[in-house]
Image (cartoon, rainbow, N blue to C red):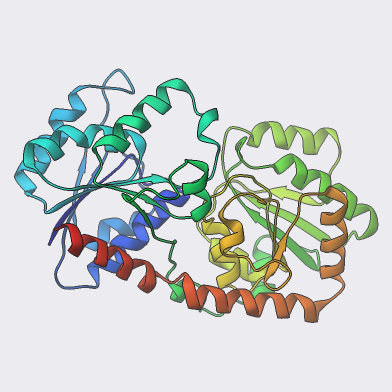
Length: 362
């Protein structure tokens, strides 16, 4: 079976991570020929180049909505002759529509990766989404909350596939003390948040919580991992307010090791689909706390059993303090979280779901 994948880039994001995991899975099978098309040169998951797949980069010219993209993608598809076109964003789905019609191939579109209120989407984005929805044969999402937010809970063209992770990424034994020394971490406890430093993630709450925890326990480091437009402002706030127990390290390629050395993992955000960060925390056996009360986090976290979903700042401080003082509770929550990942969120489970879908439409 020949599958043509189309995504904007392979920067360090949740959607990109899912595609890379899927490509890795499919390359372990024997009956798939893969072609990958990008619109940007950014490839942070560099091992994709070692998967021996056909890779094309067609950069936009002059404008974000470059009309030449339609023809340039069509030329690649015509030569590759795919059985299925699988797009991974709003714009790549848009660019795929003429090719789908001309070659008469099914278009599967990963369009729903969050659970934000669609009514708050800009007019132009809503236009693209509605056109994509009209022409795509299947609208893929990674959470029930996402389909609910987009008003598609009962639509017969929607298809839910949860994120999957390669468990071997988290099975390697890490020398915690050696890693801490390498990172110059002297605190006894590490509280980790892996999230882009963007307006979609609440790093201000992260700093607020750190300040309050610091007044009661000075042996805790809050470690933030992720790059983004807010990083400079957040570091200015840390300097101005003299918040000494926070380190925002930007983008890192050693997330598995950082999860391993963490004692508690956080994700302060709203309207998630299924967060790769939460999956990675739980795969490492760490207790998780998130503020995502309306998104897909409830589909992965068993509140009170593998982690906690709460929004009150006072409750967050109290729960973090409780966990810092109770190692057995941390271990109990982490063990249940790891079991959930092994049961529902492995790359094998995700890959097989995609295979079922591909066979249905090929």
